[in-house]
Every structure is written in C-alpha cells, then in structure tokens.
Image (cartoon, rainbow, N blue to C red):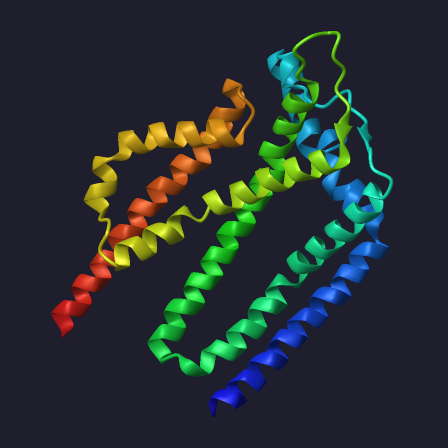
Length: 264
C-alpha cells in the first residue's frame, strides 16, 4: 500500500472508533442515573459494597472507626451550567472507557499487518496483560481507595466552625485521579517486563533493592490514599505483591533470553 492508502485506511479506523465513542457517550448521557448514582456517587453512600463490608467487619472486631461513609455528605453545584457541562464531560469519558476494547481492536487491526509473527505474539500478550492489570487497578482504586479517600477528605475539618460543602466537579476530579493513579500503579509488572527486556533491570537488582522498594511503596501509598495507617497498609499489600510478581517476571524473561541465545 502507498502512503496515501495507509492514511485512508487509518482514517476509516479512526472514524469507526470515533463513531463507537459517540454512540456509547450518547448512551451514557441517556442513562445518567446509572453513571452518576450507581457508579460515580456510590462510594460516598452507606450502601456501597466496600462501606457495607467494612461496617460489618467493624462490628466483628469492635472497631467503630472502620464503619466509613455512614453519614454521606451532600454534593453541591456552584455554577449555572455546572451540572450540564459535568453531565456532558462524564458522558464523553464514559464513552471512551466503554469503547476502549473496540478502539484498541481498530488500532490493532491497523498495526497488525505490519508486524512479524513473533512481534504479534509479544504485542498481543503485552496489550492483554497491560489491559487486565489496568482494569484490576481501576477496580481496586474504585472499591478500596476511593471510599476511604471520600470518607477521610469529606469528613475532615480544621475547625467546627468550618463546614464542608463539596463541589460536584471537585468530587468527580478526586475520584477520577484516585482510580486512574491506581490503574497506572498496577502496570508495574508490565514495566518490569520491558525494562528487563532492554537490560535495565535484573531479578538480582530487584531483590537487592527490595527494602528500598518497600519505602517507595509506603510513600506512594501515602500519596494516593488518605493519611491514615489502615488505608496505607491496605494499599501496600497489593503493591508489594506486584513487586514480587515483577521479580518472577524478570527472572522468566532472562531465562527465555538465555535459552534463545543457547539455541542460536
């Protein structure tokens, strides 16, 4: 294919991806009650899954402080068109998220013919695992970190004379940042894979700096969670698990490279 033919092919892939985003964004706009009430605003309510589980656990261990978001705060809007613009913005973001598998399919359909069979295997595996880890990170951020963050930040006061009135845009921004940060952090094993492939890190390097990594993970969990010990410890465990998985991945990558060189 000529350069112009490639551009024409790319244009149709982009148009189909854009069409999927528009259709799903319109669907999200129509079913706004599900998007807002059942998903975005749910972590601040007592009926949210995590809040119910923690409240039940608090009764078992007799620790009332674990029962979070039992008194949900109200969210306000301070701009005339604030709710409408937020509705549109969230619908577009929801359209992109829901259409992501199809967007990737279109991108993969365009790139795939140019790859060798071995490259297709590496690329396909990397995309699958990175997507899976990102999804797991998003779910962890939404069901674990978000309700803890909402409870702490929504109820924190510097004085009894100051009342919290949480703006809708501020709330959505906080939830989005927490969930996105969690999804990115869960990409650690994929990062380790590529860094090992290009020779920047080795299993021995990761083992040698395990203690240092614990300090970094503690600092990272302190940044993406409310400043309380329970939340930080809760986030640390999966991050430490991912680090150990990274060591195993790095070891396997080096073993495969060594076997390939011996065959050559």
